[in-house]
Length: 177
Image (cartoon, rainbow, N blue to C red; front, top):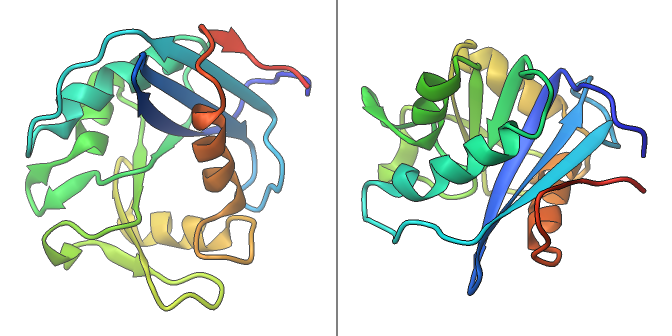
């Protein structure tokens, strides 16, 4: 896969006995089926999980994989919430504050019913995705997530970045295939 600088980036983190692996997949159009680039880094040490402060554990991993890119993407999609409740920041808001990049949070599970999130149903699934955002209108963010490639609940590229961070636990790298 040739590496180009993506407009958009989907990021995910997987935790394991040797720390964590953060992965990112870049793409340029919302309906893209294939990424234009992928990056992965290993974090040998991560903070312990603290209820209500998940961002303390995950944010350093997200920032580490973003540092592998030569320039910032226009927008980042995370597996999680930008807002836990109205006015209560989640991981996505902390990422936005650290980078200035607009963030769309796509959560598979609700936080406190997620009544403030846009509930997006894709494919034939009756279970929604919970979309929140910062730096981009939340309704527009939900429209973009609906438009992403794939016939199932989770867009293809979001599933792919999840798989990428679970594959092996190699050191920081730019992946080529």
